[in-house]
Image (cartoon, rainbow, N blue to C red; front, side, top):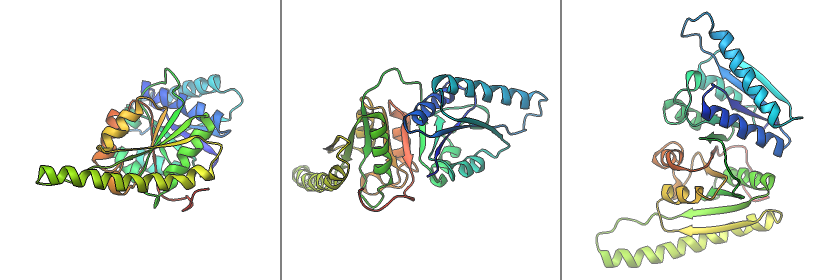
Length: 280
């Protein structure tokens, strides 16, 4: 990951919340901030370029006011949106977007554009719904097996930078069985076994990062419900873009849509590449 955070700007309230979140993150982690706007010339309006430039500069002024001393750069991109932002992600620490936008970022989270970015962005994609009103002091990461440790590593960076507790959440979805009695017995036994395994796999991360308070929780619940509930007391929820088990197809399937629709805090979707395979 490169040493800058990229935030998409389109003038909408969620977009400005994303700029504020990105600016705060840049200050916390001593990174540069790059603000971009996709100004596709589809309207034919003579004043479109001037409007785009003014909107982007207003966002930059806001960021500079929030984080004096942080390097803030801007650029207007010609589009298409997905292509431009995928290219931006290749040289970014993270890509920060508002949950709903207009203009060049319309439908960014809940439409096809968001799915394309989630599947192809080279950096973590952080989706911000609204400006934070209070600090919770907790980062939540969805456990999906350590075949993809990048989400855990990003969550650790955020917890360290925010001086926050890191909750490693494992959600186990029981199988559908015909017999109620056998289902109850097998569900309990399977959950206990999986929960023990999940708790054991957190230990190396805790030992390798003694400066971060890491707690873990195992619940027998649907992953969307578990992460939604956890988000109510979190500053950020982190999931892998390609998970395993109960977090399979996170961001590209129903779990990701559910988390993005219902999470009460920003959500970071982290691609599997670019991370080591063991705790540091």
